[in-house]
Length: 126
Image (cartoon, rainbow, N blue to C red; front, side):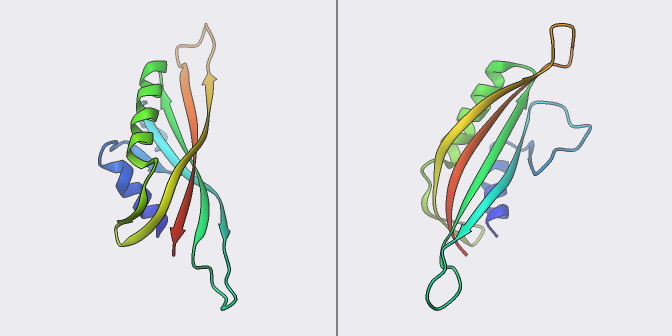
């Protein structure tokens, strides 16, 4: 499945990567990836021969520069993948789409968290 292939790609360089949510007690920095949507491309014979996924990877850190560096490192690993087999799954392509920076905290709060949500479009042959 595409989910396991993405996990394999990220886990090698970033072992603190989690699908959908991080453990509640895990310390930052870490990243979470989630699949937001999928569009199958059906054929006349029925089943889809290629699916297009939108995936978001969220990087969390108490330091802005760490968040930016990790996000860039992840992008270097997966952006531009073309016809690559990972864990027996053929990924047709992965392309960077956009990102959004968020911040949770206040000047009085010692638990300030920087977050970057980066979106990728994945074409996958199931």
